[in-house]
Length: 144
Image 1 (cartoon, rainbow, N blue to C red):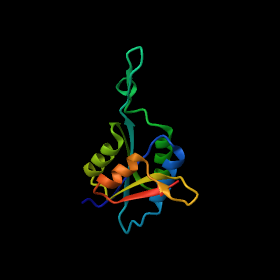
Image 2 (image 1 turned 135 degrees about the horizontal axis):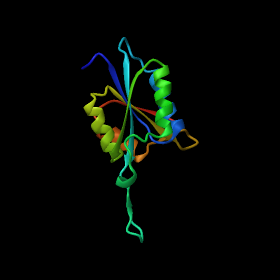
Image 3 (image 1 turned 180 degrees about the vertical axis):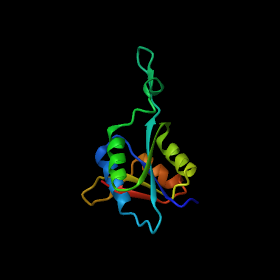
């Protein structure tokens, strides 16, 4: 393991959820290790069929076209003193999150769920649930 505590921060286009997860990283107990954050935005592969023959996300996906949520979170984390890198992938989100977590030897994945009920239960979206069930890295889920 490196001397950095590696955190993987998967974010979608929702700025509030992305920011809530980023804020949670600032309160992680880091001990003495500096924290490196990899912000990951995964564009889900989409194939849409219609009368004109259909469209595929392959045609408009651009790996450099980060959503605003990523830019804002990157700025916030850099200003908070973290080492930050960002990645954009085109794949099945849950599979790619787990794959990247393994690739960077993530110590933790931080992602946001959604608070859905008056009781305050957290509803895990399918991506969050798949990462929790299939990943082998501790996952912190922030309810937004």
